[in-house]
Image (cartoon, rainbow, N blue to C red; front, side, top):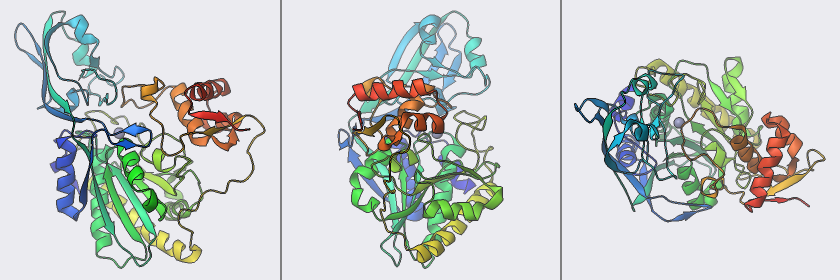
Amino acid sequence: MLDLIRELFPICRSITGDGIRQTLRRISREIGADLHDVPTGSPVFDWTVPQEWTLRRATLCQAANGRVIADTHVCNLHVLNYSLPFRRRVSLEELKNHLHTMPDKPKWIPYRTSYYKPTWGICLADEVAKSLPDVEYDVAVDTEIKDGSLTYGELFIPGKSDREVLFSTHCCHPSLANDNLSGIAVACELAKWLRERDNALGYRFIFIPGTIGSITWLARNVEASTRIVAGLVLSCLGDPGAFTYKRSRRQTTLIDRAVEACLGSSGRIRDFIPYGYDERQFCSPGFNLPVGCLMRTPNGEYAEYHTSADDCSFVRENALRESAEMIQKIVGEVERLHARLDSRPGQKAREGTAIGPGTCYRNLNPFCEPQLGRRGLYALTGGHASVADLQMALLWVLNYSDGRHDIDWISQRSTIDPKIVQHAADLLERANLLAKES
Ligand code: ZN
């Protein structure tokens, strides 16, 4: 697994383009996954498949003496992912408007993205940025954004039953090892093991770019999604931390019970929150699939997260091995419980009566998250470890506005001030994404 991670590490991936395609082709050689191309401009629920981004090279040099400050051939995190092409001499002042750093981690280069806001940018270690003299700089961001396609990989291993278990892993991050080359490596290991096994259930693996990939896959597989009786998003599985399981939105489904039984007291169990990886889409209220997320140390909770320090030395073969073995155990438990419970596929959460006496809303766009960015409701630069309360409140209100959960309930579960939650609901109502439940 570590060999595969080392091989894939140098590739500059993004949500589209040659980097992710090259990665998917390598995965396909490993396990025989099929590659699917979805053309730029294809509508997928509230979103549109974006144009393709390709990085050739980005450099930042001191103009007078040619001193190289940043070069993506040394570390591809130096370029803002999806940066527009830009080639010009700039002052330090102008440059500063396009620099991304992490003052609290001055030695590391941050991973930052700008998929949906067209701009150029360079990411630097904060101590390097702070030491830049007030002179001119030559910026050469050699990127290309053009019509093409979004590519994802998919492998289905049939079982005796037509019901399926989904394993999903994002593969859009550039040179970052734990998030999420570890997920890719563990998924490949698992696929090889399942292929040799006599399976009671079918197993579907999808290798997708984060967010837009799961939205695209769901848009094209609404019918297949009804056969999913359990699923796991796999991420951050190579660090030495203890296992962390984030429950599905429904909290007590087959996968929740199986993982909790397998992890026992050694694992950390967390309730579902509508923030994190692609479980956000699988567990959007319209789908509400029985899909949880298995990690070791969760996203945003280890110092190296989304920085140049999440490199191949941060992930360990024994941690990867232990992760793969844990998921094999979970597979066994899922099959054992499924045979006993005979869960109905695509079973939706019981609607029940309203929780809380206050105002309830209904999400008018319940299948996957709506694209908040283009409505001016969401930060357009991604990659930060935490997001502001209002941003988080928007996601909470969207996910739990199923007509049953009132504002107070959402505020309590999210621990966000009720005034902020109400403000988020007002903003979403104004954007025609939400309606008061009568
Ligand atoms: Zn990430």
